Length: 467
Ligand code: GLU
Image 1 (tube, helix red, strand yellow):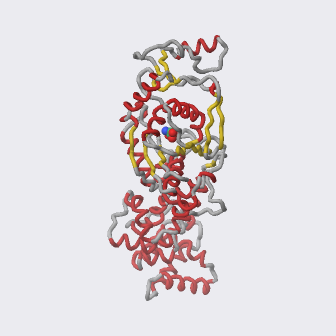
Image 2: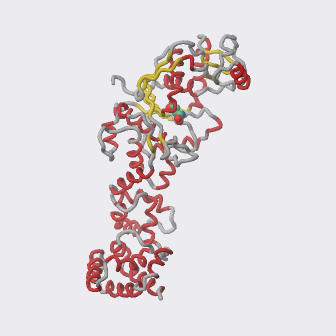
Image 3: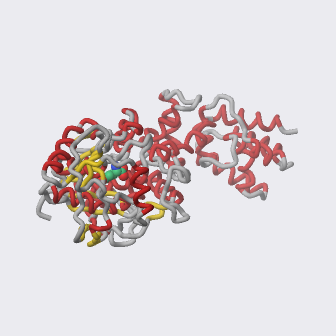
C-alpha cells in the first residue's frame, strides 16, 4: 500500500450503539492503525427526527469504552449542509443533475400504468426545471453502460446503469440524502478507504457515479458481512440484543468484546481464538474478511469474557467490579472492604462469566445481616444431619489457633476422615451458613476473609434456626 489510509466511521445516531457498528468501527480502526493511517469519526445526523446530542455522546462513550479512539472528529453532518448544497449546485450547473417536482403518488401511478418496475421513471429528466421550493434534485444516471464496484472484500461487482434510478441528491425540503452527503464528506476529508456494512453495497454504484460526475476518483470500498442471529436473520433491535451498552451493563469486558467482534467475519489465518490488540494490529487485513454472514453468538462471547476475566489481577478485578459494587447497598469502599475483596479476588475471577455476577458472589462478606437463599435454606433443612454437622463444625473450628483457609481445610479433612463423611457433604451446610448460598467462592477462603468471630456466629445462627 502506497498511501497512508484515511478511513472514516460514519454511524447514524439511533439511541444505542449497535454491535455491528462496533465491529465496523473496529475493522476501520485496525485497518487505519495497522498501516499508520488516520481514523475519522463522522456522525450522520442529517435526519432531524432521529437525532439528539445525547445519542451522539452515546456513540462516543461506547467507542471510548471499546478503546476505539478517533484522530479527527467527531464531525457532524448537520453542521456541513452548505457543502452538500454547493456540490449539488455544481452538479446541476454541469447538467449532471436536474430538478423534479413529481409527487410520490404521481410517480407510482405512472409507473404502475406503464407496467414499469417500481422506482422513478425519469419524467422530469429533460424538462429543464429550475430550483424552487419543494423540488427535489435528482442525479441523471447514464442510461447505458455499467458501474463497477471494485470491492476489497467482495471483488468486482458490476451494476448495469439502466437498473439504477435517477436517485435524489437533495430532497424537496432541502435535506441532502445519504449518498451525496457521504461522497462530499469523503472527498472533503480525503478518505481513502470506506469500510462499512454490506447493506450499503447496493448504493455504492450511485456514489461512484457522483464521484465521477464531480470529476473525482472514488475511495476504495470494502463491504463487510452482516451479523445474523441463530436463525440466520439479520440482527435487529426488535428481535435481538444488539446494543453495546447492554453488554457493558451485563458485565462484558471491552477486551473480550473486542476479541470476539474482530473474529466476526475476519480470521487471523489460523485457528487462534484469543488475540491481544497487538496481535490484531499485527495481523488485520481486509483480504481475510469473508463473504458469508457472521453469527453473533452471545454464548461464544461469554466464553471470551470468562477468559479475559481470568487474566485480570486482583486490583484490576476490583476496578472492573467497582461500578457494579457501588450500585449495591452493602459497598462503601472502605479500606477494609477493599482488602477483603482483594483477598477473594483470585477465587472470584475464575468462577464468573460476567462482572455483574460479582456483587452476588461477595455480598455475604459485606452484609451485616446475612440473607440465606430459599433453595439453599431448603437444602439444609431437608438433610436431618445438618444441625449436628453445624454444631460439630463450631467445635472443630473453635479449637483452631489460626483461622486461615489451609488450617480450616485440614481440620475439615481430618474430621471427614474420622467421621467417614465426604468433605463435600460436610461442607454443604457450612457453606450455606457462611455465604447464604449453595455455590460461591471456595468456602475456606471465604471463612478466612470473614474472620473467626463472624464465621462462628453464622454457623451457630443457622444451627439454632434448625429444629
Ligand atoms: N450511517 C451508516 C450506518 O450507520 C454508515 C454509512 C457509511 O459508512 O457510509 O450504517
